[in-house]
Length: 189
Image (tube, rainbow, N blue to C red; front, side, top):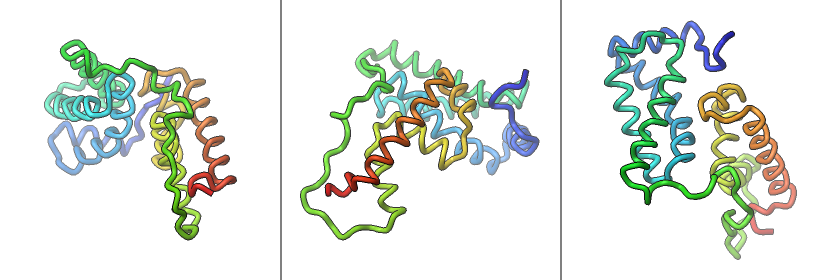
């Protein structure tokens, strides 16, 4: 059975080149996997601690990438490093651990809108404004799926979540975006 994060031949070359220390390949891997790693880390830690954990995980991964035996498993290998780093930070500093599941965010956490309304922005700016108002966990999944091109299976594997949870987050995100765009809620109208 193929791993949902199975890499294409080009991506395998990038991992192999990174294993040889090629700077451009390392940058490609960081740019591709950092956003997903941050989402994963935020399942364990508050945002500031999650960012630190991801940075640590990137350094750890780059220092040991030459030991990766199967370049096709880079995504799973890297996500394991992120999870382990988050667990270690949470054990060392329990106050940094999150107490509520970020995937059960309520309406009360949505950003309030200013009372003064500027002229209507172009539609793509409205969409970006609406994206910013989504709950963070939903926003990240929506952006990675629709803007970064991650598949549902890739998201589920990397986040260690069921495919149904990812699909629900995408559904909820689309519904919220549609409602905000239809009602111009993003502009406070």
